[in-house]
Image (cartoon, rainbow, N blue to C red):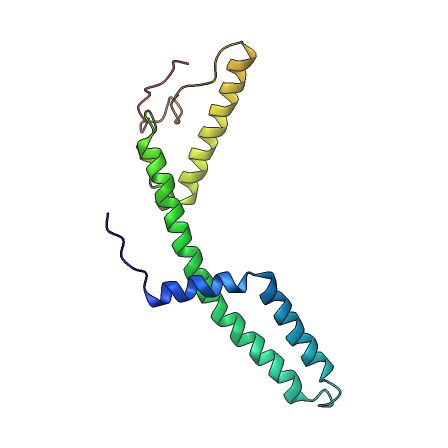
Length: 154
């Protein structure tokens, strides 16, 4: 698969996010805030003096939110694709799980509850001296959307 170079915005967002997350950047911002605080008496703690830090931090925060969100969105998509590929490549994996991020929360909660039940059944099997490996169903027996079971019998 040919790799297309990242756009300027993607490179800028990723680079800014990396720089913003470094200890040096934190220390630099801390020094700037301390310098601002030290200059308070020189400016008589005026409204303009207070407005300067408020404006600077508001603008910086506003812009950083968008840059960091862009980086997070990109990283989240990349992780999701990698996880999807792992699921797709696993023999016996349920490919129906590939797009879970597109489901509504109630459907996700139902699937989560099914996995909790699966874990409980596995613990019970272990207590009986049986194996807890395989690919059992992930949906309850009364669910008409039951996924195929290429794994062990219950």
